[in-house]
Amino acid sequence: MRKTLGMAALAAVLAGGAQAQSTADEIAKYREMIADGNPAELFEMEGESLWKTPRGPKKATLEQCDLGQGPGVVDGAFARMPRYFADTGRVQDLESRLLTCMETLQGIPASAVVDGDWNKGERKTMDALAAYVVTHSRGQKIQLDLANPQTRRMYELGKRAFYYRSGPMDFSCSTCHGEDGKRIRLQDLPNLTHKEGAIAAWGSWPAYRVSNSQFWTMQHRLNDCFRQQRTAEPEFASEVTVALSVYMAATAQGGVLQTPGLKR
Amino acid sequence: MKAVSILRPALAALLAATAGLSAAAGEDYDAQTREMMQSSFKENGIASKYRQLQLDFQKACSALVPPSAAAMKQIEAEQMQTVRWPDDGKFFGDWKEGEKIAQSGRGLTWTDKAGESNGGGCYNCHQLAPQELSFGTIGPSLHRYGKLRGSDEGMVKYTWGKLWNAKAYNACSQMPRMGDAHILSEAQIKHVMAYLFDPASPVNQ
Image (tube, rainbow over all chains, first blue to last red; front, side, top):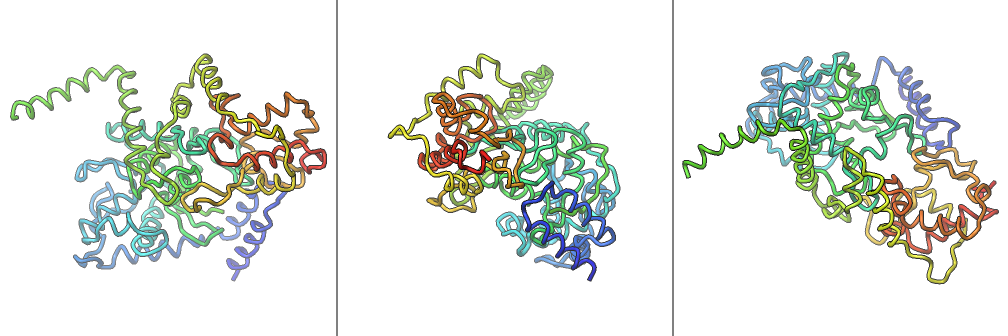
């Protein structure tokens, strides 16, 4: 009940639009109000259940999924991602690694997610699974293996992608996220080129979004950034999304994860 | 055939060793990034894959090292050539229409339809009328634009040119090329001009 009231109050505040100051303060109040109950918990619980449920043509669970810490180890796995996986020969973020596990263990083709729609079908399953995994790195330090040459390479590509200007509006990621203290309308924008901003962003996605009552993975977040940048659409779990994730996570190296986050 | 496959790892190792020169590695990463910015994207609705290709100035302004002062001047001179001045010599439309265009940030995303009229998205980045408190800060405040700057011919033409193609005045400006990139029509730019300069416009209150 308390949660419902809080959400209605925040929705009213957000709908008001013209506020004397940024929405940051109201969001902070709301976070405090529901400190012991982020709605993302519902997704996390669903994800845990999905993790342990036999699914797909092979009727298998994901309990043997190797997220980099060994088969079945979920604790602390997200804090070390994206990372290089020898079995696929690729640097993978959480979502692309979950695709590998769903395909190899359960026989669910990656295309079920890659060619799917947001908040539906296997992409929705992915949201819940991500919520489950990232909760088990909450409070842990971001620790990418930057000594790995493949991860280093993705960092270099991600940094260059961050500054890549194209499309009818000449935008890049850095247009909005390259300086401190900037806003679009009233929305505060983290500076992703510095540690503090990168921790605020990378450390709090995936997140529950109050404005649309949806749970968004970093894949979803990046997709909508590119939409607003007016580029073509990045493929789900494509190389650019992993490279940008490596760039953000590496910039946030050592920061503490607050996942899953709570956003406007 | 066999010789080639044996040679290839040796060659790769040799290349990796010489790539210790970071400039060479940097050029390689640049090329790999350009390739990635094509291969990772797909067309969706009006957002075609052509959008992943870079114009010369976009490429220059994406480099990790910013263009030299001379290169910036060159870009600005080239972009100035794109500015189209109003056919009828009239620079101003209706400020009330201009306000709607300044407020709207719609258009050109893959969830927008072809043929819909785009917004200018001005408030996304600029303060304009003082009663609109929901404004962004990526660009400077334009409150009292006309009142502070006056409206002599030089200022009017500068503003028109800046709206048509901001890169003509600042090669790597963050501001979109409203006219040159067909974001706004000539008529829409006239309305925005009136919103900025008209003494009756809320911007100048």
